Amino acid sequence: MLTRRKWTGRFMGGDRVSNPKVAGLTLREKVREAERLSRELIQHLESGFLPKVQDLRRLAKTGTTADQIDEVADASIRTSSQVVLKSFDYSAKLQETLEEFLEAIEADLHNITEQGE
Image (tube, rainbow, N blue to C red):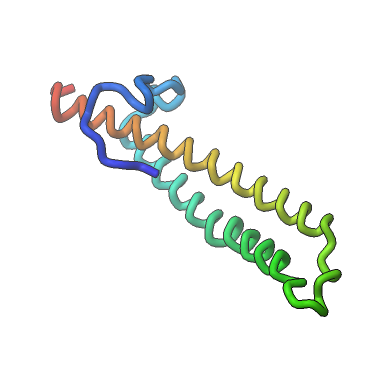
């Protein structure tokens, strides 16, 4: 999650923008790509990740009463958990890429406002 922080000239633990592909883009291209990535992340979370988590939750809740205890197989829980973890990994990768673009945008804006570049 992005937080507001004072400009130090460095990003995320002191590293400059590490991806040369991102650094070589214009500010306009960075903004457009960040917008596309944010839409993709929102769509994935709403239509991919959250429904999978809800399915796992429903599956885990099945069998809580005495007459339903043996209905849920361990394999079902394991399979559903793997699907959720894979979806989470994809979400995390999208977020990381989006943050990289946002940090590059922040650096460009800092250069424009502070250094006049």
